[in-house]
Length: 507
Ligand SMILES: [Ca+2]
Ligand SMILES: [Ca+2]
Image 1 (tube, helix red, strand yellow):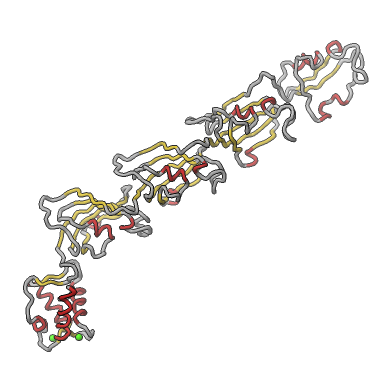
Image 2: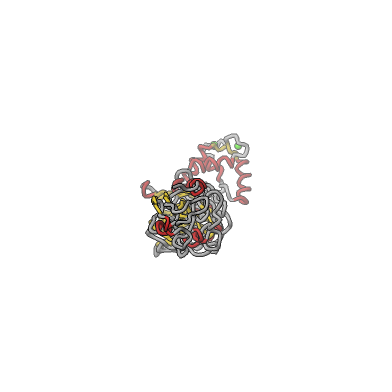
């Protein structure tokens, strides 16, 4: 009993594809295949009455032949079949599932029913990126991906008529093959998506919300939808600083940073068309949705001035600080997020300055104006009136807004602007002779210094407060000593006296 060799399907290199139980096979085979599983192998013996009977097949099968088949079932489907979806992992949170016209990025292994792998995106090390439900995929995949969440894992089994059908696909997929895709969804968005803001933590007090043109300093963690971290400002240990609404950052971030409070935390989810697009960038793959968890440390506007809040004003508040006054005050300096930078209280002594003389940053000179002794203020200083874009190495971050809590403890009124020394009463008509104590017609620095000291001690004159006595006196003397020979003569003195009436900066 022999069968012609071309009846061996293995030799033909293709499977024998047939419907079972529809009379396409000899009756015995129709019977024998029922109940078989994929990958099951059966040895089938078919008597002639269930095969080709007493006639046989001319030239191939003799009459009354008993046929022996070695059958291996490798694929199986029914025209009634639908796409089968088996979810074997579902993430805890699933805020959104795949809908028709969404764009997805997923990984898959594609196998036949018998387990043979025909394709894998994992092997290519890149996701498969496509629209769903609009015919970019085989119909079975278009169906099988619907309703899936990011992070979900599914096995999608597709009968050939919803895959590549009779034609198959190239060398990889033969005719009438059922396909099994093991899919994990990594990313999901719709081209109509805008940004999404969630997980907001808004501070209790929020006097101001960011607007276009503000300069923000914030920390962020950037992840993909599947949780992969691609960037973090925390790892660099410095904030990301930028203008907002001006195109310095990706469009989604520009939008997501608007209307935000100082100290606020929020999650900004940015679809790729408002992020890095189809190209991606660095560790960010093309068409990736970006998730930024941000924390705003501070922001300001370049047009901001100093902001002063009076926390306590004494009932007697008539003498107000002005330029030239000598001030002694305590302060706490901090950042808007509460980070303490510096405090005079920790030093155990006051900070002392001559107001308006540039001994402190411009914003502080402004913030200490018109203050009375005992008053307490909070002064907020934008960086352009503080330490600017550079900050102070190791102390003040670049572009930081500063907060000073101030208490004025002492105020010594300064002299009118331009004066380092003034008389309290009438000026002596014989001033030069008085200064020239040894009457040799010239005044040396020592004589001059002693004289000024005596006037201050007796209350007849007053020096600008807050400066070093030696320096002031030296400065005054040098101004008088026109020819710089270390002596002031009566002529030099008189000449200087004339000019002083115009310049207000001498004796
Ligand atoms: Ca003298
Ligand atoms: Ca001289």
